[in-house]
Amino acid sequence: MDEIEQRINESIHQHHDEIIAFGRDILCHAEMGYKEFRTAGKIADCLQKILSEVETGLAITGVKGYLKPKGTPGRTVALIGEMDGLPIPDHPQANPETGASHSCGHNTQVAAMIGAALVLSDPAIQEALDGNVIFMGVPAEEFVDISFKNDLIRQGKIGYGGGKCELIRIGAFDDVDIAVGHHTMVQEGLALANHTTNGFVNKTVTFHGRTAHAADAPHNGIDALNAAMLALHGVDMQREGYRDEDGIRVHSFLPEAGTAMNIIPDRAVIESSVRANNVDAYVQTSERYDRAMKAGALALGCDVDITTLPGYLPVHPVKEALGLKEALQLSAQLGGYPLQYREQGYHENGSTDYGDLSCYRPVLQFRTGGATGALHNPNLTITDEELAYIEPARIFALTACNLLKNGAVEAEQICRDYHQSMTKEAYIRYMDSMSKTEHFSAGVL
Image (tube, rainbow, N blue to C red):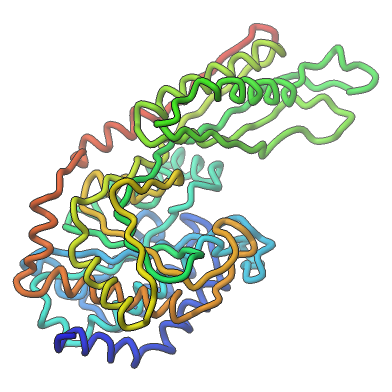
């Protein structure tokens, strides 16, 4: 280790208990996307004590703190912590006030981002950085709570459902050159996550029927639930036509499906995600999905409203994750952890709004263990706080240092190699083109 790396490790040790306490607190106070007011307030309070400038209220709850004064010459690296939880109220550490839990490990990201801010605010470490570091608390990564987000869009408070998507739209990433993100994994050790993922669009489908007594006069009703079930069967019948190489996934649930067993339901709602590893595939699958929804409505005599919202784009990996790879290697050596390299040829069928950001700015991602159970489940449990909280804080800080030291030579290399697939203006045009509502009537009501 060189002198700065040694100083980073000493500072991590100094702030050890503070980082873990921060992560434990966030774990027990999960909030849903665009509602992370307590989480954002806690982040802002901490950053305002140590940074030159902190912005709040970005995309409703987002927080953005600058290590050095805004406009400092050189490259700027953003270290990101996602703030939102999931609607899994039966998690042991679920927030009873919100019904949310950190069943995806976002509390570890937030604690690690704060830990890196505490470390990098050391004047001697700052002096070694030829550029600036931004610490961002980002809202609404999980694409859930769709009705609430749709209301925000209708009110003009946001444009998009995903937090990073909205931050791109309002220009919060305009002064970022490279973004660094972290996620918890249930495997032990560390992982470089410079690989592809699926993208998706979100569908909200509302079937309108006619209510009637289910026993005495079912012939007077038009069953919206039956229409929805038939439509979902149509989606299932399409699956044999999916190409394996497109990695298509369509998954759904019914947030509304009637009010009582003896009442023909006049309203049923399906929410679905239509995913694939390329934009053309999920756009075509979305069109097939719409046909199945209309077919179910037509067969039962319902009207149907099909709302499509842009979800997330597939991740566009960088050519070489310089700086991050070196930080992971040092951390693995210091802690004796196994290190995986998820790069070319590795693909995840899940989605993240890092995909959107990766089309606009270079994105470096990594994973750390320290948890057991399964992601997005009530059994996800932090079992190794060193690996869950302390190691990602160390890796964040080391990565920023690696990218920006020695004239920011590694940051410059990443930026030279990076190919921006969308300008901000092109991205906004794409997102707006994917947002639509179509009404279809069977002509019976």
